[in-house]
Length: 276
Image (cartoon, rainbow, N blue to C red; front, side, top):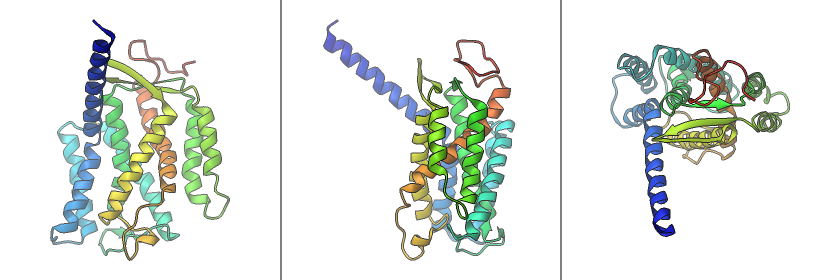
């Protein structure tokens, strides 16, 4: 077989792997896609109740429905509920300081925050849980204590930077240092692949920023510069999402570690200590 034929065969295989990767990603985003569908439908369909209330009903029903059909496991639903509470706490603070707002009226608003908003954070948790299972993820050389501490610092900084110097770039640099040797291993078809975990955070953050643009266009919430006409979300939010993803990952990783599925490649026995 000539070099050209080998190259074409390799190109075809890469294309197939890319398609399989995209399809698995799409399935992993099932909860998020359903959330966006609810946002889109409630923006054009007449409703008998306020829109934010209808969204809460839809998302509670969605969570229960996905659990009942086996799309989400009971443990994953518990993780998603944790994301919901963490997201609501952040929402309550950010709305009070004017970072963004929910202008529509609703019965299920607390201090200006509709309760459905926590489900948008839960969608991120659902994606990570689904991707972990569908791609058979494993992580090597993962400094759990350091990353957990920095992820908590990321979350706290979202509150404190309103009164103290913003430390997000310092935390970002420390995360890059902590994760410099950490790899995430995943399966696509018959191929076992890997990428730096820090790069995975950046990629997820970018797509979350894209999703945020779609969500604000659909009226999920409104930034101050979007009050009169919709505009693109500031690119700086891309970095914020990349950092916030670390907290999502840490929460899911803590659950996966107890399942014996966090450290090491799938072809080697799992361990419960750091792999160096």
